Image (cartoon, rainbow, N blue to C red; front, side):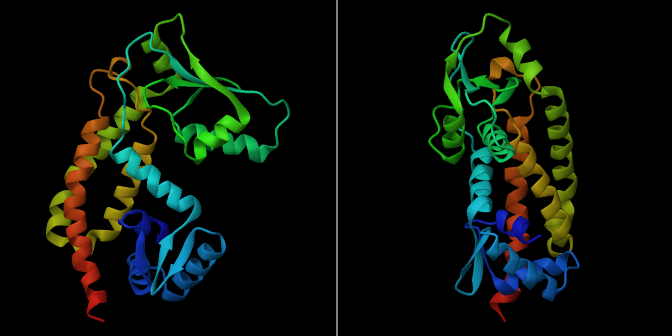
Length: 248
């Protein structure tokens, strides 16, 4: 709950009493909330910041990924322009390295063509972030062209139908929740947090493919637009709820 609250605000920092009140929305006691805060600081996920806490480490990276997922930068790409390719070069690698590579590949929206070979259309530009550094440390990277139906290859690499179906369900859930959030925002904040977190997770799984490789009814931009509108109402309810702390 603490991570969800901080991931849902910008900048990702909240006062301690606001975080503890947010825990209460989910029937988490103040004592349990304080223990969780201490453990997250010890784990490098939070830093104490004056009278509150701010995200750090992997959770701060996750917050940045959320922002990129909400406003992705997708370049122009046409068939034949090539695919970003990463090929594992090591033999026996520790499990921790393999897991780190999988996380980094997911962050870069790479899909596994076969074991040790990761690809995606070359439409996202070069990344110099931590995920790219992990991939370059373990892989030979470059751009390749494939003599195949690239739309069919994309369908094979990503479950586009499944992603799209869930995106449409989330879009409908956002629309259904708006009336209550607008009229009874503070009462339904807990459910709103859960719904928003589900949308963020799903957007981070959007492969961000070129339009020519996507189904004609792709719902990525529709879900982003719906969530953006929904966030306006959510933020209004959240501000009203946090004003209680300002009066304390």
